[in-house]
Length: 527
Image 1 (tube, rainbow, N blue to C red):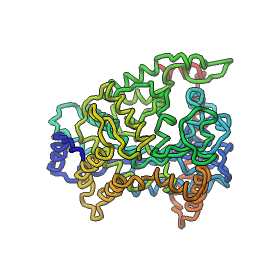
Image 2 (cartoon, helix red, strand yellow):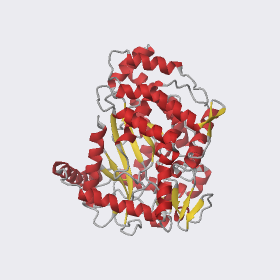
Image 3 (cartoon, one colour):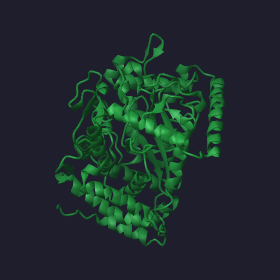
Image 4 (tube, rainbow, N blue to C red):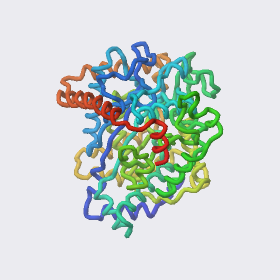
């Protein structure tokens, strides 16, 4: 066993919070979820039908929209104080959606269903307004840059903001004299840095994509093994979605964005959005009167940069996300590393979300030094290694310039989370955060308990292909949601009213457009 590396600043900060006079200072964080799912036909093919009108206008419905494809539904919850409230709302959203899908299903996994190629994946459409056209063109550019198949991968995003009263306690512990919002942004960036250091743990514990349909590669070169004639896999993978064959592909790997300060972050994003990239210039921007992409720069807009976690601020109408951050600082964090779980009907569960909340608090309280380029390269390599080989016996990761056993490091992190969970459990007789922590400790002691191992075991035991298993789970989930009784009639009526209002809101946006699209796009990109 490698000796634990003591973080004295973590111990001091944790003790400071415990002794702050408010034992519930970590409680009350606001949490929300964005969950993506492909719509598929009863035989598991990608649905070619438009986004159902009964679900509202994807441009303006705050709870039910689309992501890259017209067939890729995204369900968005508002923020809640309690995890159970969040999951109940997400469950209600699924019930509403399934009442308007006819025979279609929501695909139960992150990695997509079998498809013949990019041409089978329709771009999301948002109407004829300038903002609607821009959203579709942006997606056309993504497809040309990275391939539409990669953009059809689904995920679960966890949005989180710490309770406001925490900042007062932390200011006292840190003896900070900075303005409150500057201090808050600084603390959120400390979380971002430590998530880059420790976020591989999330892939190990919750990754559920060790296998993909062969068609995912559509003739492209790969180094995966064959599980059956229709399924490729990596024997010790946790999350191929978050590996170099998914979001961490070679195109995105070349983008370097610092999280040392808010100024560094927005500077690097702005630089990537302003720097032409020859391969994208060869694609062309406006060809024969039709836009292929918004521009030929490294990033079309800031959202194109894919990271495991990113800082967020609710933007004003027409305001680019990076400009919102520059204007008012960080408001919340978006954790983007969660796979859709085929073993949970809504794709996520309470234990997972409680663990993530405690993990983010750990990242906040742990010492968080600036990250230089050398360390960042090592951290990126750690994430890809755990995504591709996370359950390999005796796996080591780079830590402080030396190779360290991954499981020893994981045990150390979970040990440090004990005090955090104790604070989050204050006043709760059932100690739900400690229970969530213990669930994950079992996976450290036995990798076969991880969801990625469970997925491969299920494939081997049933003899199903990846697509067969995902289709079976998708049908089970549909039966589950349609069989839930009684549904919440007030919530379903609320969703129906929002859907109707969203269509009216889209029409108002389209009628309000007074400038041509070229002028609108130039103004938006200029910030």
